[in-house]
Length: 559
Image (cartoon, rainbow, N blue to C red; front, side, top):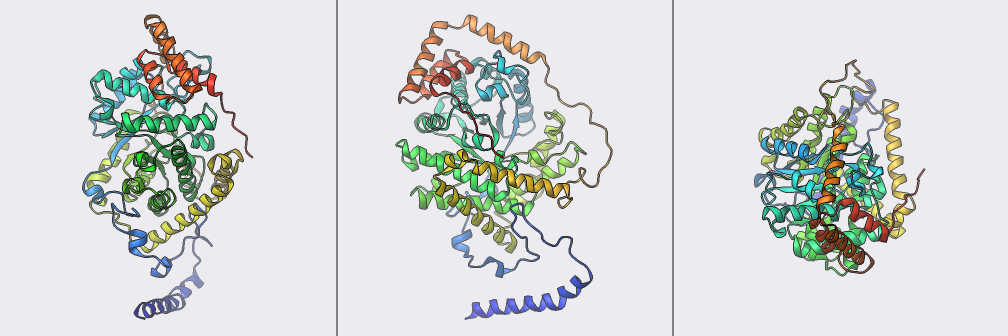
């Protein structure tokens, strides 16, 4: 009865406030917009009170950090115990140049590595392949063989750092190279710590760097799961990525829904391959975007954790609490950066990074101010890293756990995103899962429609982009932008030719033959790939063998 009286009293008090305080002001001055919305199209209310939480139950819906449903964080102490990993994404040119950038970042306080690979490496082509012309080293580092990987991690002890590798179609090959470098440094595979993106489904949805059709691609992924479970137990075998889905134009709720739907597909594929859910689920990781709508982004991270915990416990019957945890890396929104007034990007990145920290991220990359114009310079990278360090050590937000938890607004937004994401996942389930939903073009069209709506808002100035459609200033193009030396491609081809001459050709051919046999049969492909890498077979040679067996995927156009 007391609760009902309090609720009734609050409702009466709100009605009085709206009538006596709000209405006179509204009669004289309108609000800035007739309707305020989140990126997901949900109405953002003028004011949130306990009434807006509906049937919210603290223990059921929020709970305590480190236990189900993990809304408030996956660790009991969160950043009071250990700060998030500051993991700046980097890589360009050749392995030597990228190694210099990694050591520069580590010297400036970075606490983990994140490797960007060039487009040929992502697509399974060597630097001397015709398809690679003009692309070698441009958007990431060129890696053709174990020799390049050795140079990339020269003087970087793999037993003392964790490394994230943003690679998908050729993930098995790059993981094998990393293991082989560790061996050469005297670091056992079991001691290696890091994350492989290895998320092919989002490539079909939003990015396009796929090679093989879905079925063999999923087989390779589950082979990686099984191999790492025994041989590389500290390795996160997949980073299920919503980042690129958001970069393609999705809303926050779509980012959560489509990412977790992909996660469901990977878990089911591993179970279908004969693995028990608790044998691999604790090594699944996620990768999200931190966008501009600050409160919605904080709510998004909290909603994703709560939703995934329920999926793993209730849908898949996972028993180990570690299997219920959604651990994630965050990158600030590249698509939000502007070439106009690039210093504004420092502020955008700070807001986005703060949302990731308040949302409980496990690691974070902050974009650089000049990335809408070029690969970032060292000065810009340092500012981006210092942004994280300032948040960590000067803002105070890392001193208490989930400081926005209990905010009537944030809790309501969290519930709203979770509800919308559940509806999307249920729709995808009715279609038969993610692969049929992708084949039909449904997911791609949902993202395209959201991107179109946002662009219309920008063009109508319903959404202000500072420096682009308002507050415009005439500025010259910044100087000292980073440019990849065109000699990189020529030099990379020379080094590759020299490697082919001095390696044991017979050993390479034998190793490639074993990969072909494994692909045609049911043998885990990771062992043969690792043997081929040790023999200095190139990434392109290994990929070509796999193409010959698996074929290549041709994506469908969507409208």
